[in-house]
Structures are given as C-alpha cells and as structure tokens.
Length: 183
Image (cartoon, rainbow, N blue to C red):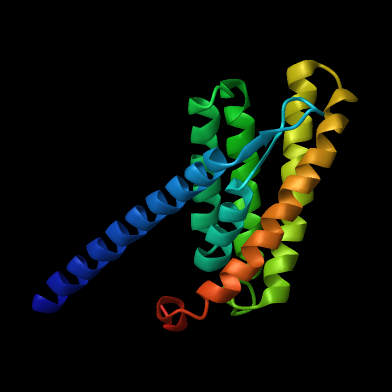
C-alpha cells in the first residue's frame, strides 16, 4: 500500500512540475516576444522579435509537447494582449506546429536536444510550416493570395535570427548540471 501511495505522490509531483515548467516556458516566450519587437514596414504588420528564439530553446531543451505549448500559449497571449487579437488563432496554430516540429526532430532517434545538427534541422524544417500557416491565414483574412507574400521576407528574418540565438544558448545550457542529468 505504501508503494502505491509513493507512486501516486511521485506522479502528482511530476505532473505539477511539468505544468509549472510549461507555464514558465510560455511566459518566457511571451516576455521574449514583448521585450524586443520591431514592426516591419513590409507585409501585413509582421514583427521581428525574440520569441521565436525562446520557442526554439523550449522545444530543443524540453521536447515537442512543451515546445508546442510554449510557442502557442506565449505568442498567442502576446497577440491577445499586444493588440494583434485577429492574429491570435493563426499564431496559436503556427507556433504550436513549429514548436512541435522542432522538438520532435531535436528529440528523435534517442537524442534529447543534444545533437546540434538535429536541432538546426528541426528549426529549419519548422520554418516553412510556420510561414505556410501564416500565409494561408492571411490569404483567407484578406481574401487575397498575393498580398501575404510580402510577409515572407520578415518571417524568414525572424526565424533565422531565432535560430542564430537559440542554437548557441542551447549548447551552453546543455552543459549545465540540470541538463547533464537524465530526467
């Protein structure tokens, strides 16, 4: 009986830790998106911000589920509180898919975000998916399939900057005691 109670306590503790960690990651994405955001003079009002790098970091360090939730919740909340409400549904889908793809690839084949090539590959493969979701969303939103093309250069810049920040940060963080232990 004692063993069952210990298992129940451990499961509850793990679930609570996962919930808190996911909330922290989503908050970091939100704050990173708000911290520096430069409105682009091209496209449909896109932004360059640090949230993409935090999404990549979350997905690489903690896997697909937390990456998807951190990106969707963090950037979705930014749209809701930052005056971009109409974009929130598109952002939630685009960033959930992006975080999931990055994490899934970074954590594939027994890796846990510890292979730089897989991490870069995950981020690179996620970029056209994210851009496609925004493109289709804008196409329907504006009933125009040409205008969304103007946002593509900004999306590329935002993703490349995010990748250039995230990879070195993940390399450094993976060397810390927390990530050296297997959890």
